[in-house]
Image (cartoon, rainbow, N blue to C red):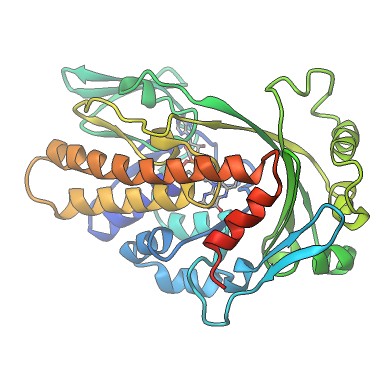
Length: 366
Ligand SMILES: Cc1cc2nc3c(=O)[nH]c(=O)nc-3n(C[C@H](O)[C@H](O)[C@H](O)COP(=O)(O)OP(=O)(O)OC[C@H]3O[C@@H](n4cnc5c(N)ncnc54)[C@H](O)[C@@H]3O)c2cc1C
């Protein structure tokens, strides 16, 4: 297994539960090597189903935040347009911090940290040859690439590379909001708050421990920052404040009080990305079907990890046939989600801000 993200760790956990040892080869030097990222909503039929297969649903329920499903939508002038809160017993899409999910999955798994893969070569005499950044190489029977958007395993099965969507996110965050920024804590509420304007949006999401992540989202060419030093937080802040000029002051305070800014141009793979089956190599999660980040990527990655592990552990016969059957199932489901999330991104960061509101009304239970 190459990659210790949601796909790789869920695969390893489920295989481990069935009594099979598995090694996760992870590029990061350790679990705390970089900030784990924001919050994820895990859907009942996807991410939660995967955790159930891993035997981790009770632990997830204890850690997750059902109240985090709350969603508030504002006009750029600050008017509240929608203020949806889940029922107390609603467990459809509870939120969990990525770091908490990673620790839950990691537990006692055998992860080899600092083992970045550079490329893999199928069809070698001893199996699939895996080349590492430190110059070593190893022959394995089955290599599963769960190494994310810029997968180094993908070229072994597909020549397709991700392309830019035309939408960029710039992420910032606020700590300890309830005591340091109580007005912003109230504005964001228990879950997410979104403001939609013309070709731009500002979304804030509450994480655990009073941490809030803020995403400035806008349509722009890939080189929009050509005259900007992205490592200069004050310069990025000024540029974003200019981009959102005229929006209500409390909304812009989310940018004024944000700490570091992280540049995230959104890349995707084609909606129906498939490949001709290659014996001994497959892909899971973002490596297989990178799509706009609208609540599906980690969910799919986890369910795929769980399903492939379960099929390999319990299915009869040839593992290669098991992988081939799994790929067909993964492509069909991921294709549907890629189509939905691509259409969703068009409406959420759109020339017509009412498209975002209409999408919310369509998908949100009343
Ligand atoms: C801002 C944002 C918000 C999102 N919100 C949600 C959400 O609410 N719900 C949701 O379902 N999805 C969400 N997503 C999408 C989600 O983050 C991804 O779909 C998910 O992380 C994919 O999991 P993965 O395991 O396939 O890949 P990744 O999470 O990218 O994990 C890949 C792992 O492989 C390792 N790796 C990379 N290259 C190598 C290499 N060469 N050798 C060895 N290891 C390597 C990486 O270090 C990493 O640990 C969001 C994405 C973004 C950007």
